[in-house]
Length: 360
Image (tube, rainbow, N blue to C red; front, top):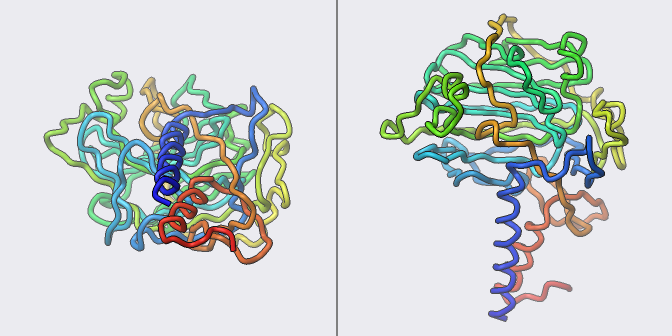
């Protein structure tokens, strides 16, 4: 029995070590290769991180901690970039995050939707100024220009929790702050070929854009350099609500065009949940200032321009489902919902440790 438990632990550790690397780099770009299907959320979930971690998000770049403020991401030294990444993808949808940004010159708090072919929609908070937030978008990882970002004035985002929303359809993207629309991007207004329109993972965390090892353009954009002696610097997230506007078990790219019309929803329909998503409720509309010039605004999510996208997903054996709280659990039904294999391994280890038979 002891040797079985040890082998389980080693297998789990191997899986997790691979996941950490995979969360930072695209293992397969579907615009140039035939890639595995992306696990679809295909529903709505409401994750309360004040209740602890959930296995529908995986960690990388550091060790998030959990408490009354939910999940906290702390930057202490050079190289720290703790983040969580969803194991699922959405194909258009609404993501709402309740977040307190990190302080500190050069420190960046990030909330990112990102696809395997490097479409991207961002919120970013620069620790040097607590009264603004930046919205941004990229298509297919193209960073030839940096004129797509906008800065938006707001109240202090480091003193308390504020709710931010990205509402994304095939026609437009809307960014809101506590119910105030700060930016709307119509698909027709985006730069040619740059409108994000492929299945996205959800990523959030903190990192140091002002680290001395970064390109000078990135340091300048993050308003660094970072003085780690003034830290640690922490960002916290109490909750995340995610609604997938499509349905099904997985999403695949039908060709290499990168257009939303080429995306196939296995067992469902692209935009199959759009009619049930509800109306976007807003209280006001504000305008932002366009960030122009040659600032080296990093694409690729959290941790700077070395991040090349998100990982492709793997599937569990039959009979596992995701709950409305974002937890992946065994199901007594015949419904099959794919997700990551390490959940299965940990469950097997726990059963072996308790001395119970796995198959009954």
